[in-house]
View (cartoon, helix red, strand yellow):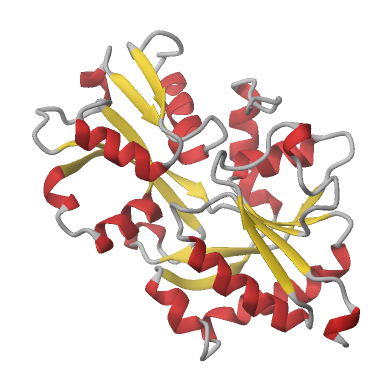
Length: 278
């Protein structure tokens, strides 16, 4: 295949900077070599994924490949004309709770000096969340509160911080009482700043959640088989595999849409498969 004759593989991530942009740079470059195309990568740090037609880069030909949170995947698949399909491969990150499966968790953090040990003790507190399109940071809390029969008025206030990193900083600064953090993001933050473990405590973990999906524009489906094969082989690649391992990636495994079935049901029950994010 002549790389110069082919359009580039246009990728977008909504998961940085929680999962560092560099991680997705390495993945995208590896995939571009695998399919014999150049590549571009952009990052949208405002939201965890598009849940509004005006924010959908896949339907307007701006992106072929996407890394996003599962509520956005479920929203895009629920459109009358879905703009994406699932690339049937899931990341498995280094966490013993995952048991080798494509899962992650919401780790609920408070300051280490707070004398609390469970969510109920934080009634009338201030909840910090990264954005309203996030499963781990936002929807998981809605789901957990509904399960506990606390659908309205549990928190005194809620503060949108803009990112998981900002939520961590808000907890440390006392601006919010608690936040639910993507477990992979928290693990990376603790590796980078070991003293975080002395300043924060995890009081609950919600999940497991299905790992954030990789999606492909429905106008680029011919790339699907090649991308699937390349992703499954990626952790064993001698060049990129060790680099990604430093970010916590252990392996890639086959998945399908049934991985997200429970989340789809939960979001439907919460009335959340509708446009929300501005």
